[in-house]
Length: 153
Image 1 (tube, rainbow, N blue to C red):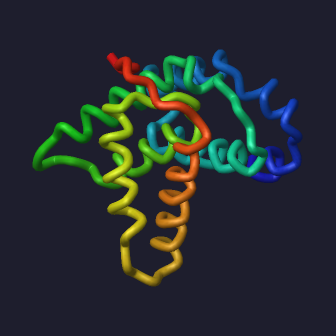
Image 2 (cartoon, rainbow, N blue to C red):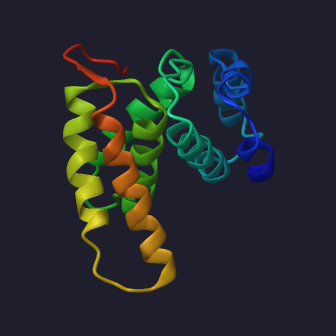
């Protein structure tokens, strides 16, 4: 998958990664045909390549999958004791890497979450990659605009 995406140009990328594709992925998650963990892994790769290609693609933002991520971010943040920090970090990274418009509420959750991830001081390779992805997610905020309306359910 990585090799295929790596050799795509902008037009190929935009023609494949459409709102319909993200809606189908949302349906597959709903029907448990794909796990959230696998979906997040795929979406992080797509977001990474979208940033590398400097794309402005509104397909994710206008999809049901984006709504799922917005709701998941808010719901996970509201949990007290059983909060899954890794899921929250991964969800925020996907949302920021693929989105092109962000609600204030979602950003108010994602920014502190990714700052916390970026400030990890361990020097192992896995943590280094996590920190780099968190910082890449931050870099996407400047590219797009922030909306004042609620974009989640």
